[in-house]
Each structure stands twice: as structure tokens, then as C-alpha cells.
Image 1 (cartoon, rainbow, N blue to C red):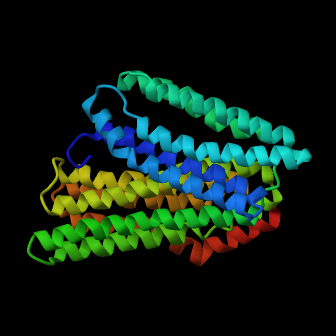
Image 2: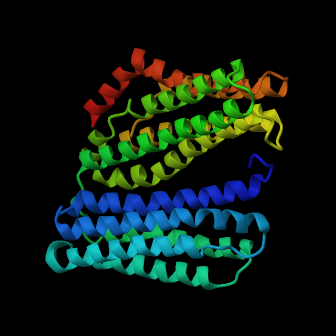
Image 3: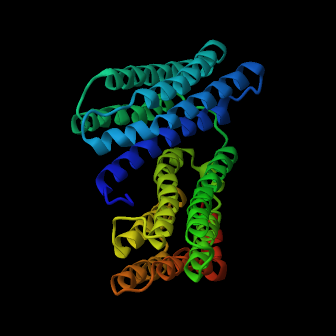
Length: 361
């Protein structure tokens, strides 16, 4: 995207984010319900770790094939994904053997995961142009996401609400780390390649850390486990909504990385587009977080309207300033005020609204 190829960048990123997040989230829900913590389960976990490493190694080929516009190269990615999913199918097979109460559910999971893997392998082996391949990706994604819904209707698995909330929180922390690691990696190149520290480099460092800190604080304002424990049917909204949470957080980190390249004059896009690459995913993160709160807590809080209005203003301001010629580092630093709106709002008044909402549950 820093080189101006926005379409391939967005398409590849969304696909990659879904692939990595989806596989690990499926494992998290299974582990919450059926983690026996024996040698079999631990070895299956290691196999999934190997699979995600292979999947990650296939990302450059996938991005390059989208950029070229020829055929979609998913070979290595799909190989890693299949390794992960085979391990999960094995674990579901264990459940079907030893847990009569959940046998139908386990077999349903095995069927949908297995059929989806056949589809992914066929897609990877076929020599299909990028546009047609992405059209075929859609039904496979639908199958992947509908599978758990169908399986759980056959008999809900005994996942633990507090454990699931903790797992998701840990994954959020890992993803927030992408904001910091992207900032550090890019600034390291900038500082050591452009003659040392500058005011802009220092401001962008503060901005990257401030964004990570603010997004982290925002997320953990909400006691996710409490509504999930009382209303398990809201688990699907919670789980699927986090796919966007993870992607938007990682994209914010990528945007900060591009801003660092902008300071080093290593990008082919204008400063306004650079700021948009930070502001847009950040706005998505905030919006989806409020939406998840509304759905999971089953609350429509009028206080959110004021907070979101102030947030929209603070998202728009740096974009307008960038268009007017204000420096990239200053504009990114202003974006750290976006999560601060929610943090200050909830630490002063909103925490009472949360407490009242929990009482109504």
C-alpha cells in the first residue's frame, strides 16, 4: 500500500487476517470446551503451531500474485491451513469417540471443516485468475463461518465464558503489539538510515505507543465475560465480531509503519492517504467495539452517541490537517486522541453505565 497499490494491499490483508485469526479462534473455542491437557492435546497444539508458521510463510506469494494480477498463489498458505485444520479435525474425532453427549456436534464440525479443506485444496491447485479465485473464496468463507453455527445447534459445547473472554483479550494484546512492533521496526530503519533522531521520529514513536495504549485501554473497559456467562447465545456475535477487531488493530499498526516510511520519503502516496491508512482502521476498530458492546451487553446507551460524535471529529481533523499541509507525525499524534475520548468518557461517567447494564443482565 505504501507503493500506491491500495487494492492488492487491502485484498491480501483482509484474506490473510481472516485466515490466521479464524484458525486460531476455532482452536480457542475447542480448547475452552475440551482441553484435556494430556500429551495428545499438547501434540495436536504443536501441529497447529507448525501449520500457522507454514501459512505465514505463504503470505508473500499470495500478496505477490494479487499484485501481478495473474493467478492466485495460495499453495503454501493452504498447506499450512490444512495442517492446522487436520489437527482440529483429529481433536473433534476424539470428542466424538469419548463424549456421547457431544458426538453429533463433533461430527458436524468434522464434516464442515473437512469439506471446506477439500474446497481450499482444490482452489489452491486450480490455475484460476485472481478475480475468479476470490469469487470462489466467498462460498468457502461462508461454509467456514456457518459450520460452527450449525454444529452448535446440535448441542452446545461447554465452553467457559471467562476463559473465552480471557483468550480473546490475550489475542487483542498480541495484536496491539503489532502497532508497537511496526512502529519500532520502521523507525529503526528511519533513524539509522536518515542520520539519527529527529522531532518527527520522536513524535511518531509517541504516537505509535499512544495508539497501542489507548486501544488496549478501550478494549478492557468492557467486562466481556459477564454478559457471555449469562447469555451464551451472544457468543457468536462476540466471536465473529472480533475478526474485524483483530484486523483493524493490525491494520492500524501497518498504517503507523507506512507513516514512518512517509517521513523517510519512501512511499508513493501523498500524506493525506498516509494518514487515512492510520485513521480508517482506527475508526473501524472503535466503531466495531461500540457495536459489539451494544449487541453483547444488549444495551443502547445514549452516552455512546456523544462519544462517537467526538471520536468522528477527532478522526476527521488529522485527515483535514494533512490535506492542508500539516506534518505526518503531528497528524498521527493527534489520532492518539481518538481512543482517549472513550477512555476518559468511561473512566469519568461511562463505568456507571456499564455497572447498571450488568445489573440489568
